[in-house]
Image (cartoon, rainbow, N blue to C red; front, side, top):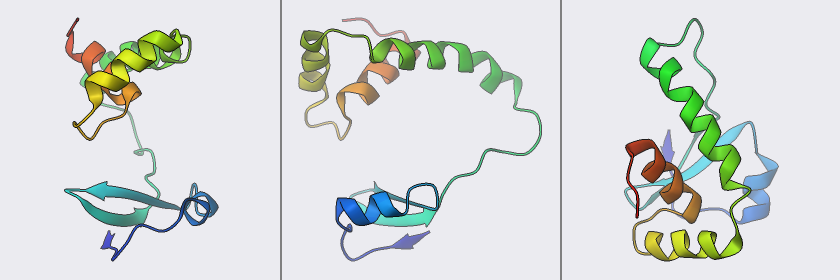
Length: 96
C-alpha cells in the first residue's frame, strides 16, 4: 500500500484495472496491488453471508431509477454511493 499525493485521472486508473487498486482511505488517495481471493476454504461465516450478498448485488441492477435516486439521496454525505448504501442496509437488516 502506498499513499499518493493526488488520485490519478480515471483513464489511468482504468488502465491498471485488475493489476493495481486505487481507492481513498480516511480521505487519502491510496494504491495497492489488486486484491486476490484467499487460498483455501472460506470461513463458515463468509460462506453463510455470501448468498445474501450475491442476491442484493443482483437485485441492485434491477431496481427502478426512482429507488436508486432515493438511496443516492440517503447516501449523500456518508462517503458511500447508492449501491454501497443499499448493500450495507440489506446486509444489516435495516429497512426504511
